[in-house]
Image (cartoon, rainbow, N blue to C red; front, side, top):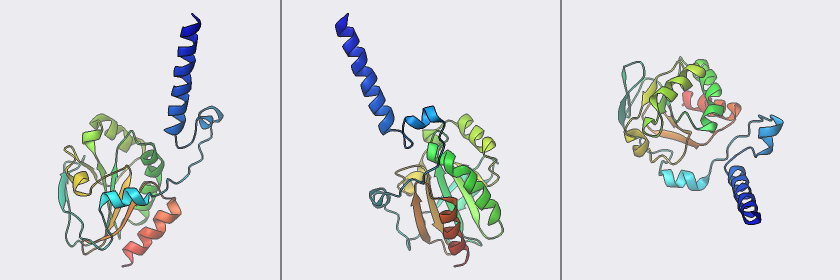
Length: 192
């Protein structure tokens, strides 16, 4: 009986350590109700692994969106573009969604926003619920076979790629920025 108690204690300890290491806010926030949003840092290693470089031509792709239309990325365009790769289960994506919605509305006359749900790693029903919850009005493209995410060498969610009117990558953001930081980057992009 004593042995089982030690085994259960060991399992509980390991579970606690695992939960703490996989929670960007720490276990204490679950009990205190703290919902302070801390921007995720952009890892230089993650950016290096993505292989995306500002100044490079944006890889071309074409995907169907929830609205049934097909949208294309690549080459010259009328407006600059923000491509946002995400999944419904991604907590940083949930943190970022309200800011994306506000900024997409703010820049709607000068910027296109394509939100790409990497559906291969998600469930369509969950993606639809996410879009409804956050009231996303911009096109939500479905990357069902991960083709676009692979072309962009995706390494983490969310990943935002800022593309200018000439189809050139201007910035790659892996993780979440504050609304103000993202706003500054978008203002710079639309004024190029």
